[in-house]
Image (cartoon, rainbow, N blue to C red):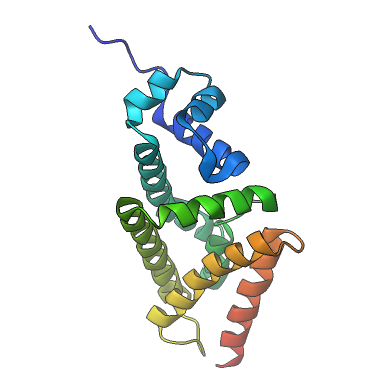
Length: 191
């Protein structure tokens, strides 16, 4: 009879995200195991390799995107406020520029791996599709066509995070809020 799984994938993937924030792409499966409080064999058996671990982490992030953004949008007083709230969920927990830079460094490595690059493309597609649904609901008068608005807002999310990672000034959440507000206000003025 097989032993029951007591360590969840979510716990191991959470440990992976923490370790990447601390060490960047130089992290090891042993680092993840130590953070999770399990043996290296547990992590290796579950994910096979560092690449397998990164693929699982990207899949989990992609699965969480739509749920997290739609939940935040539902808290808005109106659809436009909901769109803003959804956009701001992306980096609400990112407060340390060193950790953000380490994640950015890992992203650079991920882009070299064809499997990880494809999974990152899927993450961007899901994000843009979710933003598009929220843009259509918000019905931004004066803004560009919904498809373009979604592309611009999705690009803004990722671009602000990259820029802040290399040139941190203030809090990332504040910077993202300022830039999202500037874009949405400019579109409202256009109506």
